[in-house]
Amino acid sequence: MISARGTAIKRRPRDFTSLEGQDFVVETLKHSIESNKIANAYIFSGPRGVGKTSSARAFSRCLNCQTGPTIMPCGTCFNCKSIDNDNSLDVIEIDGASNTSVQDVRQIKEEIMFPPANSRYRVYIIDEVHMLSNSAFNALLKTVEEPPNYIVFIFATTEVHKLPDTIKSRCQHFNFRLLPLDKIYEMLKCVCLEDDIKYEDEALKWIAYKSGGSVRDAYTLFDQIVSLSNSDIKFDQIRSKMGLTSDEFLEKLALSILNDDLKELLSVLDTVFLTGISCEQFLLDAIEFFREILFLKLDIKNIMFIGVKFESLKESLLNFDLKHVERSISVLLETYRDLQFSINPKYEIEINFIKILRLKNYIPNHLLIKQIQDIETKALNEINCDIDKINCDVNLKSELSDVPLMEPDNATEEEIPLKVKIQEPDVHCNSEDDDIDKIFIETKDNFDKIDDNDRIKETFIYLVSKYVQTLVYSGEVLIDGGVLYYKIFSGFEYNQLQAYQNEIRAEFCKEFPRLNVIFQKQFKDNDDEFDNEVLRVKNIFGASEVKE
Image (cartoon, rainbow, N blue to C red; front, side, top):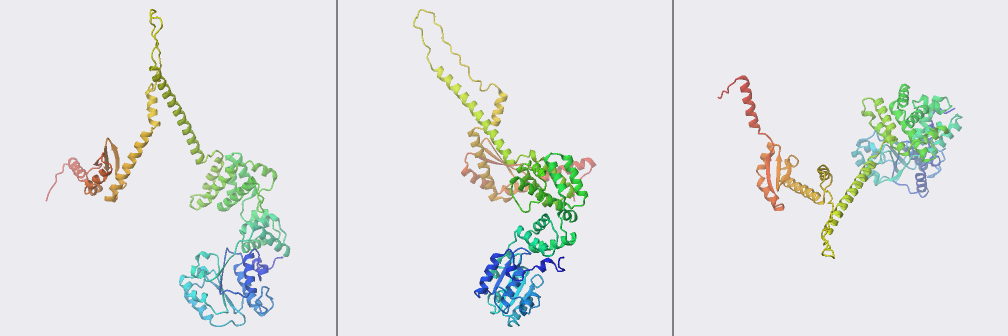
């Protein structure tokens, strides 16, 4: 049976040989011990549960072992046992989240004046050091830079970016990384063999996947599942007891989407909700399932590909279009992000799965734009061909009209006039078609004229904004018959503009001398409107105004 202590504590690394997945850190620290080049301070950074604090303790054991400094501490001397039992006077572990003030740092500065009690080095391990205040960091700078020879600082943190650069520049930095999932899977198998625990490979793979590369998280989840399953770990039991979505539901869901069966889709979703699975957990399981379909389509062999068990089901899921699967995952991820803002999460999930069902007929925006551009290009080419044909016919008529008529050789014969009838192309035969052409066919001159008008309007607005800032977007500019009309819709702004009308006209005419500028009011005076309203009230009630 499993030990009474947690697996994470029982299998905590005691030396560098038992530290898994951190080869760079292990080799560097070993070489520094062998060459007797111990730094004043170290930073161990990385995700949670990858061995930062355990490495700090192992390093302290290597430095303070009575046979050392050595890369292989004996584990039997007084120093090794005291460090292992967390009661060493010379290895002090401080929680940075609880000791954040300057006063705590001052206490450390006072303590380092005294040499170690029983060991070669006094080691300060400050966990979650990023929680210290800025004042505490500033008070620690000088101590970290020039401590006594027997002092070693080890700072452990999961958020190294929060540390001041002045601290990081005084320390050797070691970045710990997450372990590969197959490595965690092998470690879990070793635990099962040592503690005589029955298991299924799929169950251990699922635990390794859920750990996300964190050894401590894997061991914690493993202990929970061992207690749940009574030392007989089965994957189906994990899914049913831990609130996970059953494979059967996910498979039916995928097949209903594949068969475009909306009724079956809503029925499966309703059944899933009745089982009591949370909306968040269901979405996470659905995202993982569609990710497995994506791997299946791409023929990727992955240790974590455990959701699809039957070959017949795999063949059915291969009918999914690759782009459909990619878009489905995107929709599910967006749904998960928006779930917390939804009025009813169940409705949100249902409508987004209906959207996934309709994704077969979805055409991306860039394809629609390309199709529209192709249609426009084809239409313009046909129009250009018709115009070229018309121009060719007109040129042929003009050439034939210049050819002189041939007189007959026999003058006595009756002259037969030669008549060549050239049918002119009916360019303007249909006024309705001509109006359509005017709307949809713009010549180069028209485009140039539009561009010039836009440039003139932009220049005028820029000049106005130089004098009256509030008018940048409040007026309307129109150009008609050599006159630029500036319509103003606010009386307040019109009054401001009156003081600068001459300056604006003068500066504008320097660049566009052929245009006149006219400022127009497009509002009613408030005083006139008020007087009219007073008169209307008088007429209704037959009142007369009494003046003091």
